[in-house]
Image 1 (tube, rainbow, N blue to C red):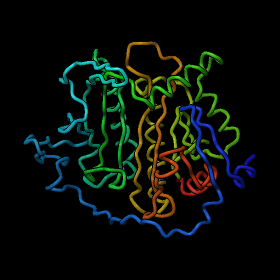
Image 2 (image 1 turned 180 degrees about the vertical axis):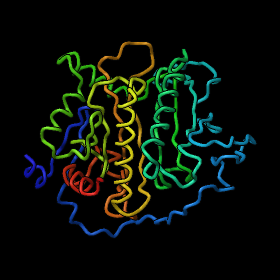
Image 3 (image 1 turned 90 degrees about the vertical axis):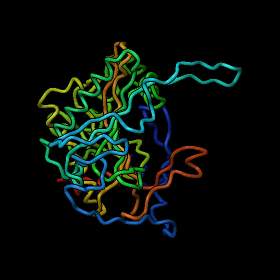
Image 4 (image 1 turned 30 degrees about the horizontal axis):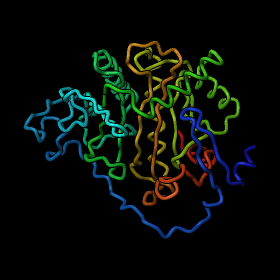
Length: 340
């Protein structure tokens, strides 16, 4: 199967979204004369007086950050979702709209302005995970919040407006599109097999060992078979859990180790502060039982050939379906060689 996939154009099925991705391995040989991103040299400083996320600095709304020593969480000064939005419903023929309430938060991973997850210790990352758990739980308890999305945009190429390592939490009243897809596929599999979709998937992946990058007692890091982005990866707990709030102390340490190893590996790939968007998909907080859910964390990095050449999702991808050149197996082999 592996040789067939590496030598022929084909489609791969994403079991989580019920969608397909076109894979064209022969295109890796084409010369590149397109756009190259500006490679930004990383300036290593612990505190930037002009950064609105650094400890003790004043933000644009006039509030001064505390002199925090590990993580720092605050409500986003320019949140896309607001808790006091007007409630309304518009249903005018084919014109439909409804209000959306929510809360946006920012999580600074560390007071160190230059310290990304890749450079933090396992113990420091564990503290970040504890904050993620707390935000998921506390926001999810609010009666108007039905989903909590935790994510990070790293690097200017991924739209990050501030280089201080941080992530975000968007909690909202409706369940977003991507989560709806994963809810449907996991529900269907659980109803048919009485087992978790991702538990069955990683069991097969571990047997094949073609796309596995790293595993410890509780976590698996792999390039998913259906990956869209060139070096896309996923962290999945071996034991089915609906959300990260269920992590035990030992599982949390293993999760932190998986994040550390993966992000450090990324930085080695093209010898740069590797950009990506990462996000945790987990059970909605709508009060329903979600025993079919298996939480997972995905990393979508844009870089394709070097620190300055990225994958563009344009043209065919916009109007037809996702497409990739290097196979998931090629990407996995490259990353595994760098995994330490």
